Length: 401
Image 1: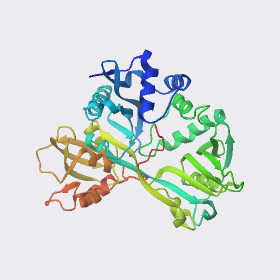
Image 2: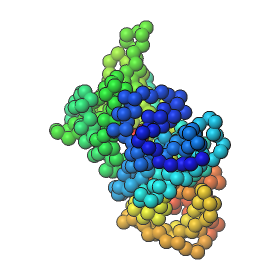
Image 3: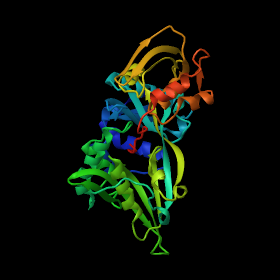
Image 4: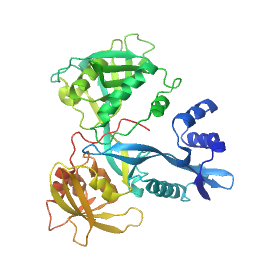
C-alpha cells in the first residue's frame, strides 16, 4: 500500500470515498464548492492499494490563539477514514504519522481535531484539551437573575450581509479566547453554504458600529402544534460579557418556539450563573477539540502563565514510548524550556500535557486518576501545575472544521 498526496483529477472520487465511509453522499457541485473554498490539495492524503482507495486523511491550515494572545500555526486534522476492507492493517496509523511529519515540515507546532469517536486518537498523543457542553433548555425558564447590562442593538441579516459582520465579531473574540482558530473569507463562505445551510438565521449584536456577537440558528417547527418548536443554535460567539448576555437574551426570547439546543458550549460559560433557574439549563459534557503537540518547547514557550513557577516534566512520547525530561521556567512573559537530566516533578504522557494546556482540564484530577505521576519529592506539583496552566477564559473552539 502507498500513502501519497491526492491528485486534482481524483479529488471527486476521493471525496466520495471519504463521505461514504461516514455514511453520507456527495455530488459534483458540492465537491467543486469544497475544492474552491476549503481544501488545500497538497495537504490531502490517500492510501492506495493498487487501484483501491483504502483510506484517507489530511489537514487544514489554521492559526490558533494561545493563552496570552499569541497566534501559532496548527494543522486541523480531518478526512480520516479507512475502508471496511482494510481495517486493522495499519492504514490509519500510517496516515496519521504522515500527517504529523508533513505538518512539522510546514512549521505547525500542534495538530487539533474533532474526533468521531473518543477512543481513536489518544494512542497518537492527542489529549482531550478543550471539552465542551451541549445545552438543552425549556425556553419558559430563561429569565436572568444576574447579568451584565448592555446598550447595543441587534441586526437581523441574510447570508451575504451577515458574513462580514460575523467575521468582525469572531475576530474580536478570537484575539483573547484560547483555542479559537483562524477562519478565512473562503472558509466562511464554505461553512455557510448557500444551499446546504439555507435554513439558517443570523443575528448580530452591535454597539454603535462594532459587531461584538453573533448567532447562527435554525428552527424546527412542530407540525402538530404551531406554538411549539425547537431552536438549534449552530454557533454563538461573543467578544464581551455584555454582548454574551445580550445575544442569549435575544435567542431565549423567540416566539413560537419552546425549546433550545446548543452544541459545544464552553465549559466555563457564565450563563449558568446568570439564570434565575440554573438547573433548567441541562448541560451534557462531551469531548470537543483534541490536541497533540508537534513541538513541545514551542507550545510551552509561546503562551503566558498566570503565576511564576518552575517544574521538571517528564513527557512520554506516544509513538516511541521514550521519556523526555524538560526543565520549564514559567511566568507572565512566557516560558523557557530546556532538556534536563534532573528528576521530574511530574511524569505524564504527551496526551496529558496537551489536555491540561488550555486550562479546561486540571492536572490534579488526572493525577488522582493515575494518569499523571507526582514525585514524592514534589507532592504539591500537580496543584502547582493547576495554577500554572489555568487560563481565563478556558480553552474553547466553536468552529467545527
